[in-house]
Image (cartoon, rainbow, N blue to C red; front, side, top):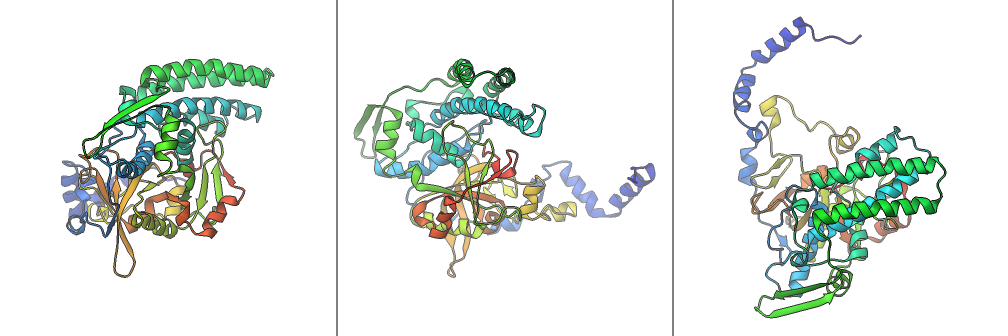
Length: 452
C-alpha cells in the first residue's frame, strides 16, 4: 500500500531538514540567488582557460545570434561553412542567410507533415493513438537534424545574408509557428476524412496543393519570399569591389560553395549507448524528415571515443565540426565553461544529479540531443589525450567568452550525441555501416529529438 504524506511524516521531514545547519546556510543562499549559479565551482573557473593546442586558421565573424528561435542547427552548419568560404574569397566578415534556409525548411516541412498525415491515415493509425498524437503535438518546431539541412541546401542552395536578411518572425518564430500549427492540424483532419471516405491519390494531392498555397502565403508574409535570383556585391580584405550574379541560389551553392564544402561528402555519426541499440548499426526514425523525396535521417551508431577522435582530427585539418548535444547540463553560461565539474550540487543540496548513466538518461527522458554548435579548436596533451574543445555558439557575443564555450572531454562523453565529419576522415569499417538496411526507431525515440 502506498504511504500518504501524513502530518507525522511531514513533521519528520521538517525536523530532519533543520537538524543539519548546512541546509539552513544553503537555504539562506538559494532563496536570495539563482540556485544553480550558487553551485558554480570556483576551482573550475580558476582552472579553465580558453587556450587550445590546435585551432582552425580562421574563425567566422561576426558572432551569430539565433535570438528567440530554434534555428541552432542552421546557424551551426552555416558557421561551419563560412570560415572556409571567407578564406577562399578573402573576406573579413561574412554570414550566409539563415533566414533563407529557415524559409524553405518551413515550406518543405509543412508539405512533409501533410503527406505524413495521409500516410498515417492510410496505415489506419488512430488519431488518438500514440503515433498520430505525437505527430500532432511535435510538429513544425524550428529545430532539425543533419540530413534535413542537406535536403534543403541540395534542393534550394544558399545565399549571402545581405541578399535575404532577417525578419521579425525569423528572430522570434513562436507566433508564426502557432498559426501554422493550427492550420496544419485543421488540414490533417481534412485529409484524414478524405482518406476515410476513399479519396483517390490524385484528389489527396490536389487538396494538399490547395492547402500548401495557404501555408506558403502565411510563411511568405512572415518571413519574406526569397528572390529567384540574387546579385551579391561585396568588398574583399583588400577593399576591392566584387560582384556575383544575377545567379540562382542553387547555382551560387554549386559554383561558389560546393567546391570547398560539399554536403554530400559529409556523414553524420551518433553515439547512443542504450543496450537496445548496439554500436556498429544503422538506425533511422519513423516519420522524421522535412522534404518529400529527400534523404532519410540516418544514424550510424558508434562509441563516443570514435566521434571525439574524428572531431579532433577534422580540426587539425582545419575544418570545423557541426555537432549536437544537450547544452542544458553542467554549463557555466557567463564564462562559457561546459564541464562535468562545473557545479557542486552535492555541497549545496546534499545530493547530485549524475547518478544515471548516459543510456539511462536517454531512457528516462533526462537528456537528449537538443542543441547544435561548432567545434573550432581542440587541446591534446603530450600523451595524445584529448582534453577540451573550443565551441562556437549562436547565442550572441554577450554569451560565454565573446560567443565561445570551453567544452571538456569528460562532458563530451556524457552529453554529445552526434557529429558531422568528412568521409575522408572516417575509417572504412565505420563507413560500411551506411550500407546496412537501417533499423527503424519509433517517431518518439529520443534520438529523433531536433536540435533547436
